[in-house]
Image (tube, rainbow, N blue to C red; front, side, top):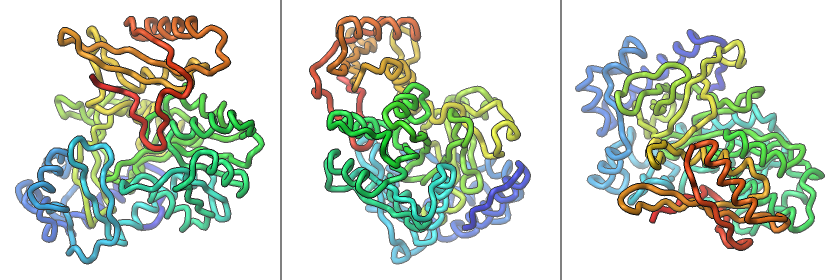
Amino acid sequence: MTDEQPTDRKAIEETQLRRLRHLLSEIEEGNAFYRPRLRSASLDGAVKSLRAFTARMPLTTKEELVADQLAYPPFGTGLTYPLERYTRFHQTSGTTGRPLRWLDTAKSWGFLLQCWKRVFKTAQIGPGDPVLFPFSFGPFLGFWTAFDAARELGCLAIPGGGLDSAGRLRVLLDNGVKAICATPTYALRLAEVAQAQGIDLGASRVRAVIVAGEPGGSVPATRESLGRAWPGARVYDHHGMTEVGPVSFPNEEHRDVLHILETSYLAEVLDPKTLEPVEPGQAGELVLTTLGRVGSPLLRYRTGDLVRPSRRNAAELGTPHLALEGGILARTDDMVVVRGVNLYPSALEQIVREHPEIAEYRVTLTHPSGLAEVAVSVELDPKTPDPPAACRNLEASFRSAFQLRIPVSAVPTDSLPRFELKAKRWIRK
């Protein structure tokens, strides 16, 4: 796969159709999961148009994939080629109950690396730049693709597994790290540890903080918190999924926008209830077809990510790739209705991060009398002069933003968990 950069919608759609035809021709015989679906929809490698594909191909859901792997363990029937052609194993981290196992051929892995290289290019990271990956590598896709992409670009890719936060900071300073890749939560945690140790991160060489794994990188207040925590560095957001791959890249000028890499993915944004396309400016569920991950493809996959296509045009944004305002807004199954108000975790995070005295927080969701209620516990900076007033201020912000009374209470310093990877701040009781 080459790093094609079309300059207009026509060029993007021509690339998408060419790659879609190749994808369908490869999987129509070898992929037992999709073969009957393609035949039922009368689709093959000669599909006439993108519109014909999206009109006739049924959606794929995570529940169907889980059921398939349960029925045909361990990998299900979604592999296009014989098992001996696969060289990479990963599994999802967020699937309730049983994680999805996902395999890649060497060629499909190369496709994923090209996607991540676009993120590094936007962040102006290239050959010779030291890049730190401050976490322990697990079986989910996570930053494995980022690490290999950095290595292929000629960066000095530095693993941070097996070290605590203090050790990772030492590696960062000793090796002149220019960029880190982390979740927003852990990037803030590293800065918290640096402050406690008297380390001035503004004096470090870090110029790019690339975040993924949580929606925080596109939440304005979280992004501003990261900017304060890492002086002199710019924050770049990105998102992806184990079963899909690295999906988006940040806009170089408009920090509130993520772009889908449409030469690699055929993207749709559908109303989760009607399954009809939404208009620009309206929120809907992101549906993706993986155009280059031929060995383990997904066709019209319901990602569960809630996004809002931008009303701004390509000339204003500088690229014709689909633009998402605010990045990933939430998961479609994360919304909680509290006294008639739709409450998303990212919206609550925005309010919390507007209060810089809050070091960490946790949300407890309960259902007294069958109705959802939320309460927020906060860990305050030890230098906060009036903790009760800080809690009242946050309650007032919640009331102003959501017209809800959300009780806030302070907890002792270092009593809330810190997360290296995806944060789990919402506790359901």
